[in-house]
Length: 131
Image (cartoon, rainbow, N blue to C red; front, side, top):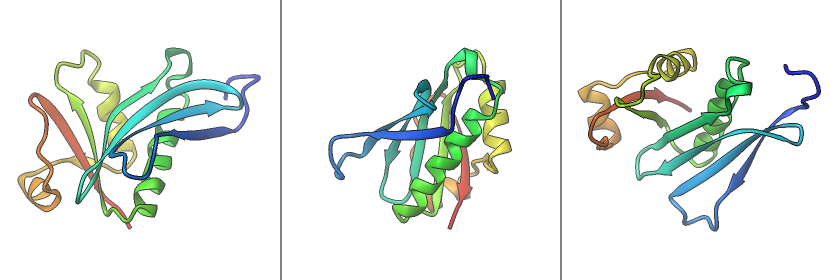
């Protein structure tokens, strides 16, 4: 933990319960350390953006944020969670490591069929079955 930072929290920002795209801001104490965006589909919840500010990277905050979103998915009744990254991302090693460390695995055709998820072009997707 960085000196002077407090307890990890996630604050949700969206307008109403019908919003399918939601943003979550991550804080340590009162300090903003990053955010993520999710998309709610019929059969799965997808994280399509995770951003932990550089100063706070490699300190476990990304993992904590993913686990907080997993709890959101459970509360909303999802049993499939997907993390998606563009293959154009120059730093693909860190997102892959994050996904694997949180229990995700690279999606197979069976996973796509189960979730009904149709990926964006040039993306790499990881899946985790929850609940």
